[in-house]
Image (cartoon, rainbow, N blue to C red; front, side, top):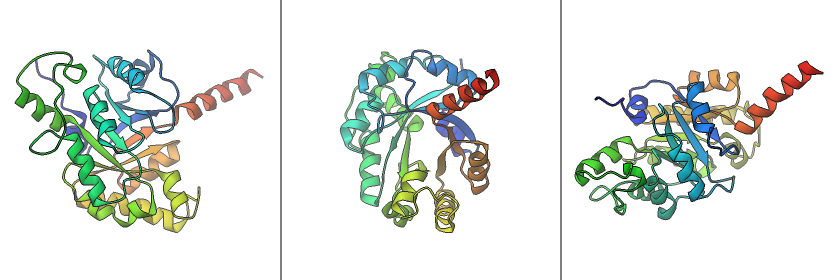
Length: 255
């Protein structure tokens, strides 16, 4: 029985892929709901939400059998956050505020087993679906499926985006638009020429280095804008705002 290609393979082919970022609704049904909606990936957020590893492991388990790959945004780029998330079965790890080549190299090393990196071995557990098998084959497969998503969301990250993109093992450059505008001194001014230039720069650098440009879009206008710039990994969000918007519209209709 052949398996569908990893999401990483699909993305690297240049296809636009839709997913979702989840900040609040860490429930047993959310993965199936997202898959039903057509999401090919879900990024569960640990940076701003209080989400812990035990709940994350449970969320990952709810994606089994779905045509959707589970990912996580860790709070920071330390090895322990990244390695534990991958051991639990994360197919991608998003790291906030990546600002230098050296930082990107450390992140890539944390995602990979020797000799490519310095990740510790944990086979036969959640990431393996508790199965045995050839360890060398497992490592090759995990390297092939794992996405390392570096968030470019500070003025330092923007300044060093070329060097970050050149690091082998970094797969996605993801613009965090609110933080980036804040660090650029133009908070929330997403139509400011400097911000527009920054978004275009990240997408262009990603393409130049054979990487993926990623973005969280909050409405149709953002989707179209990001796609026009060359962003191909797009997450719908935020879950809280989308639910409030849908409920608010229905309540208006009721009243």
